[in-house]
Image (cartoon, rainbow, N blue to C red; front, top):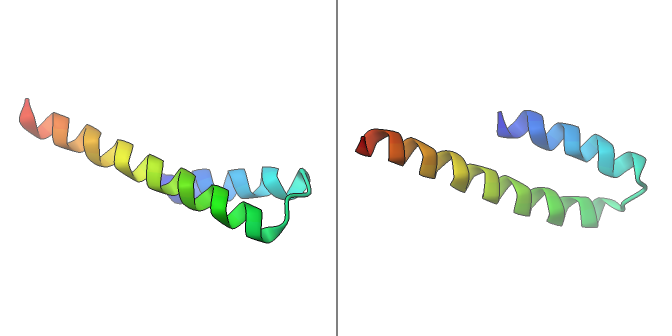
Length: 48
């Protein structure tokens, strides 16, 4: 799921003309945020 989102966002960033270095930083931050969110959601489900 995260990978699909990142691929989509990367395509948007490319169309916007962002350089690869900027795309990499942004995509890395987004990936970390999404993974943390997924992990937190999984943890909450296990606690119930």
